[in-house]
Image (cartoon, rainbow, N blue to C red; front, side):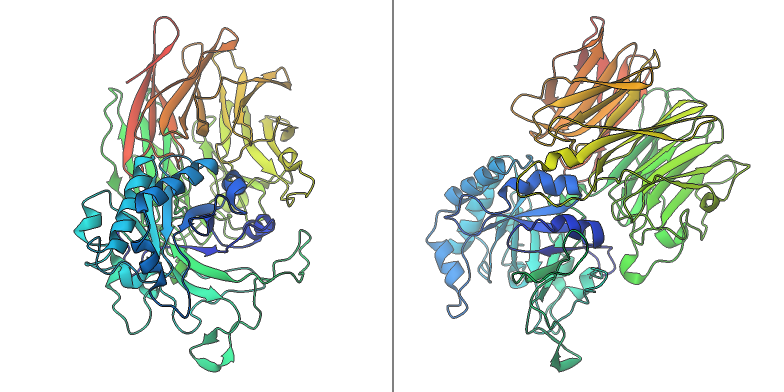
Length: 638
């Protein structure tokens, strides 16, 4: 992944302390990620952020974890480099990794060393550079990826791009390049920050080569604070107030302590896992057993592939489609696909329909039939009601030529749209679920249970700010909705002990006997709840035991030969699974696997005894592993 001048990017911010109104800001702004401080200096063991990693995940925020080496001193240039030269980088790297573990960060996440002034101009050939190299080596040894939040002046062939650093695992670089005047255009009324593409990152009249380096995943390109001026109006203040005057929970603007911010842009919606910023979707062929279609969505394009009946997976092929090829032409700063989620479905044999959101909020579709293969067209599915940032997507076909699509709009309501040869105008077939609202980090689990029944589930959240007295977890619930021919949707809301974790997802399937099963993790990541539909009611039971010394980062369910398999990725970067049969869960087993801990996996049956698991690696490559139902009823891995 190399930044190019026209790369689509995601807007974000960096503030020094947690604020409960991060809930409100995610709900109402277009911001996608935020800095997360593990320490503001080597002597700190915690910050106001430390206990909020999972809160940020469940709310829907991308994150980038920062560990500050030494603070800069305005009247002492070079103080950071001198301090690093006299410090033990290996010890500090181990401490940063320990604080990441204490914050419950998953392995494989990136920790960024915050170097607050130019300090590494000579690579690792001086003591300051050796400190950085030793710090990164220690972070990697603890199971995390290493990065640096640093001056653009250090992103050179003699600095962080030198062979000293490239000879190891390439570090992720997030430079700051702040000009002497305001370059952003934050809208205080709509809480919108226009994305700044890479060609806008360099400070004017400086060498811009660093912005296209393969290691660069984002940039802090502006400040939001008092005294900043507009280059076109140097005598006027472009930012008259000192802080983001966030409204309270009711939307009323309030005066509070100053909250300056750094404005950021990234080529990934989650800089914690910047190279894995891709969505994988799988769908079974509508008439050919064991054949599946795959779609991989990246911000810059779409790829498709398939698995044939023998289990052979064809390498994904780029469709060479831009958002303007399958929908309206976006504004220049929104020219890209939202790579957070995707869906693909087959409504009859040899047909496939894929769905993806653009950064502009329009849901787009592309299709393959015997007569057409990804034709270009100008229309979106939702011309008047945009999808929210990072919207979840799910699509099912309950009978030939019928498609039901689900996503979340910008008011955080679940939306259903559908298509049939007799109802071909997507924009005319639309239903909005009045309640409950979808949590920012949730997926959507949808089932075409029978030709005359649909089931859909999601994690709900009412966007209540954390109460001072605690008890916030009860605001995170599970919504399960059922539609049958002749009746409208009926929504049931379940209270989950310790609340429902949105980010790890709601897993849902129907077994061979027609019984629905749902599994969700609690917000403390200490256990799973298994919901079973008994007639029209839902019965809550305990799920399988947690993985050893870990928790689930993603969950999926699939029926397999009179059993139900739960499959996911753990915080230790392993594949985990358990099976439900004879009214009990098997022990949870794990095995090393190459899947990213920051992205979901998708499941597909093959025959009666195989489950293929698809996902991306931490570097964004498509990968598959297979689980096998053994003769004794247990599940094996290879």
